[in-house]
Image 1: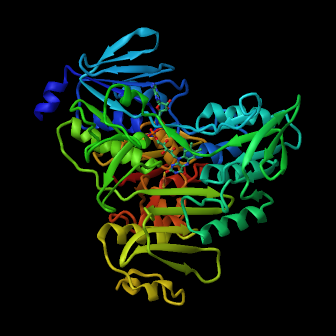
Image 2: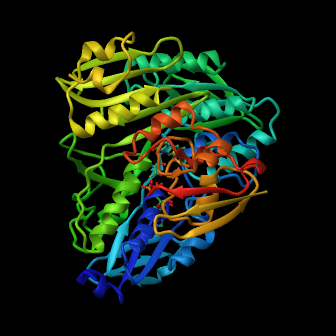
Image 3: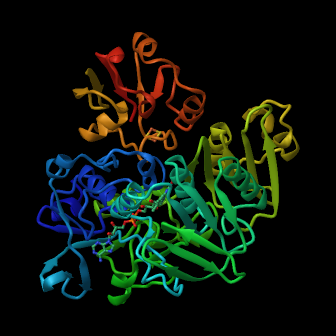
Length: 418
Length: 102
Ligand SMILES: Cc1cc2nc3c(=O)[nH]c(=O)nc-3n(C[C@H](O)[C@H](O)[C@H](O)COP(=O)(O)OP(=O)(O)OC[C@H]3O[C@@H](n4cnc5c(N)ncnc54)[C@H](O)[C@@H]3O)c2cc1C
Ligand code: FES
């Protein structure tokens, strides 16, 4: 047994946030052999669940209890993980190694893990606070409220504010449920911050074919509510009546706890390659972190399951005394209608794009290069491109761009490698 | 109702009963080690990799194209591999044995 584990048999590890990062961390820490207490705290009352299905399959399903649990209810007790739900952590006393919970009770820790994630931004639009049927989409309870409105409104009209992945997935899901859906995007194209214009065009077309209306360059100035319906008003005078408004305009990182305790915070909580913050007893993992990625040699803050799970594992290893450095290539997916988008790598800073369209079906991929270095791949209905993209980024192999682009050539590593 | 047996890497055998849903969901609901299901079962993460016997594969069916492609992420995949989030539980696979890959 490592000295860290031996010492740890009398120790307590407290985790704030029981979602993808916190839950995976707690189970990984036990698996690493930690013998001490593990206390996992979240203000959300629901048993921890997967977030990605909230805007996809879960929103579409009519079953009441259909959300996907991260772990079975009894597995927490089996692994000796004390799950404390419905409890907010208010502050950290680093000197006393304690956290203060709501109602002023406190809990001491030997190791503290912040997995506080993020919360949705509610833009400061006139009338948004007064409107009754406006919801973000981040938690199971948000989805529940959205479904309640839909179930009591015949032929509902929905306005989705924001054309990012969550907004577009929500639009696709609500359309499937029979709503008429309009997406209002402030920029000149949807997905503008995250992908190329070709990809934006593809998704705009996909939504148009499925009867979802997308309006770009729409700057919302006010929401006017009457008894039964709201109207979303834009700066160009356009008005959109809505029984339901879903807001998907991005997130605020939950860094207040860390900042209040004097930890280093900017665009997220600063952590090293082991998830450690600038306090040897405090770690941070998941959406709330600002960390270095060796494949792209820069600091990033990510919003994806991959990073939550991978940082959870390396932080657990570090606390158990095994130093494993974070070296993951980020990946992400989005499902809309029958289209599956898979993304690997980080495209920011690309200097050249290579498109590859597969013959016949609706499969294509976009390859982002910085000079000869492959940065990222967006694969639409083409898992092969995603898988090979992952391998090429990890191994830093050089590709023959002309061959890559030529869909008459078979998509094979032996052919597209330079 | 179908009985599905998972054999973990440390040779634990766990037999579970399910009615519907995927074999991955059944495994996660019962805490089978080595089946993580990080993507929630949409064939995007390859953390639900299992091996079947040739007979088992015949009953459960072969992997779809996307599944076969995703399996390539795992260097240990072979022709008896499946991602078990893509195996739907039904009477037809009663008695199936799945060897957890990781
Ligand atoms: C609708 C939707 C769809 C998505 N789709 C995808 C997808 O397809 N693919 C993908 O990779 N990612 C997707 N994501 C992103 C993914 O869900 C996040 O990256 C992931 O949830 C991050 O996990 P986390 O544990 O770091 O943070 P979070 O999931 O944000 O969890 C943080 C937890 O901490 C709790 N908390 C915070 N502060 C406190 C406090 N002071 N006291 C107590 N508890 C506290 C919160 O209640 C919350 O439960 C999606 C997200 C959403 C909302
Ligand atoms: S659970 Fe992600 S691929 Fe099966």
